[in-house]
Image (cartoon, rainbow, N blue to C red; front, side, top):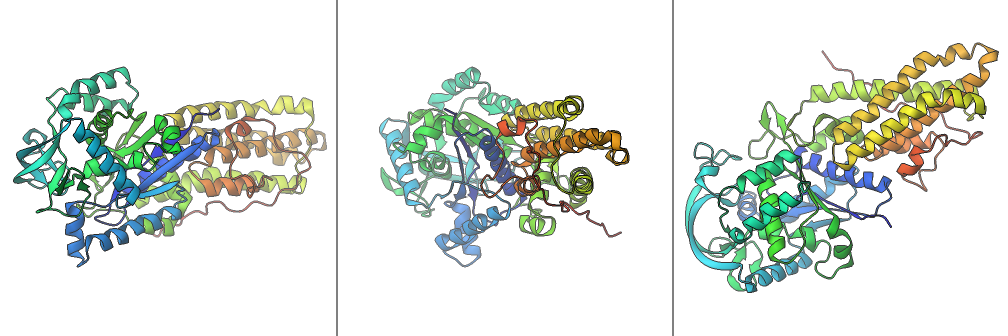
Length: 516
């Protein structure tokens, strides 16, 4: 019995339309999910939208809309975008969904009844952009580190969650489970923050100031604070507490987030779960920012890249590949169209596209599109030249993908593509074809090149599903019946049936001509 795999994105705030940052996170989750499909594990992929709070009200007012209508509109933009990027999720959750609201109310009441929620007056520095209070030590020159604005001093009575009660527990849990937050630098960042006394968390807003939210079950004059609403989506989507999906998938929960929401996911969320008597998630994977002109891409700064434009201009798989290849997971990356075009022309058109076209072109030229039967002795001589590095590539790819090092996994595939291209040049099938006495070697060379393409196509599926399916269909696989090759089938060598008739190659990635 295989281990289930549960992957989530953050639920995205609907105060503005989606940008490339959202797209990267969601593609990363989709890539991880598809990889675990290759491992033949049961998977569940969750994404969605976060729809309550001050910012939604302000954004709706700016559009002369009520919050509900505005949230419906922006949430649909996210829902419409993901299919364009071949993102296939199991549930798209909204914090306005009735089943989610019911779980939030249940957990709030449970924690309140246990004594971990109390009522008090509070004065603090509040950032409307982040929708949270800041300590002065968290500010940068007196301003919010994310929005660059001075928080407003607010004094009001609210409900608070006794986070401080669980500080020692969380430190010990992170010590006992060093793999919980990855990469390690972000675990260290959380532990560094926990060296200071942990303050209790304000979890409500009075309805005199905000009505767009989930009403506290124990006080109808207040709505819950955004994190006590939003974070709970990860379990409400699975049917907590009795749902079969919750029992099956929650023990294997993995969250992907950007580093700007490390604190709520690395501190608030595990403590909330502990207080509610629920086991902590398995892993939190934290990635960096996409920078444009040396600045973080963000809605508030107005330097966002439109994912609709990119997909329509360069194609789905090209963008998926670029995002996985050019960001070292955990670190920041720089985005520019010039770099994107260079990557498409170099890696996709030249390396992968030319290899695919050359091999299938020679195959059709020398064997009329019919897979040759290879002599066993010759196969033993020629096969290992490609099968051995193929197994090395598969093993490296698998180990990197398991820890979400998507860029390194991609490099492992491209190193094998480079190996294949070098093999074409050294084996020189065009020279072998001139010599009748080299017919068996020619058969073995072309056959094993086809096998190499099969391995490449199989490994590309998580990142570039359309390209993988196109390649595999040209290698004789029925992609209507099977969408991908399981990792066990990818490792088999040889696997192609002799005598099979294969279609002619097509151009996978035409070069993009840059106007000077």
